[in-house]
Image (tube, rainbow, N blue to C red; front, side, top):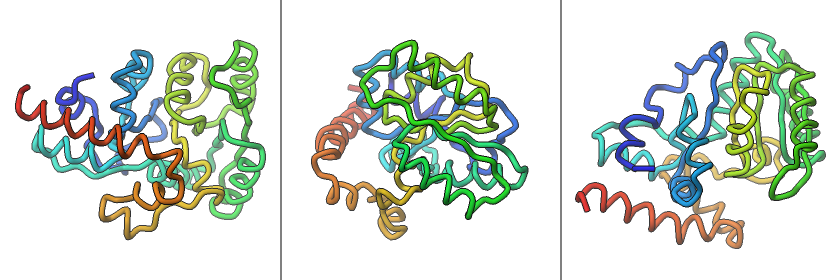
Length: 239
């Protein structure tokens, strides 16, 4: 994965309002950490680059676009695409499905959907917690999704597992929009607090999360971010 080619040709640059739920699409997000992880994982790279829409979910990606391509783009986080798609589904009375997380988290999501978006029909499935799914696991997951036949499928199983699972099974999924949004399941359920708009506007959404979850997030901030910035510098200087 080459950073210049990524920001020139793949990262989404249009307003979020131009994403249509009527077009069959796989929507993923990319940030400096997932960029660095994909460079070590060819299947993850394929999953990201095969996306119909690859959202710039990170101030580092926004910075790279400005420095390498001269494009001023807006960060679009997983929480942003989640809210936008729910608003669109609510207008049309569509069905949405949540695949991932615990039963408790999914119940909280369904309860909140009923309150926030009463025109949406919602269902969910909690897959087993394991590094890799068996063919039986995947069959059950697909059966749960396809029997509901949602317009939108939200997948939340952490990266890169979620993106790679969607990539491997995309032809078997009956949904118009499939988007992997990871931590958004917990944000929306209220089991994990998202950073406030103050930090988001500063481009520092990661900072309060790092303070709350240092063991889980230290690597992406103290390893991946410097590596990404070094790659950006090398690319800009033609090294």
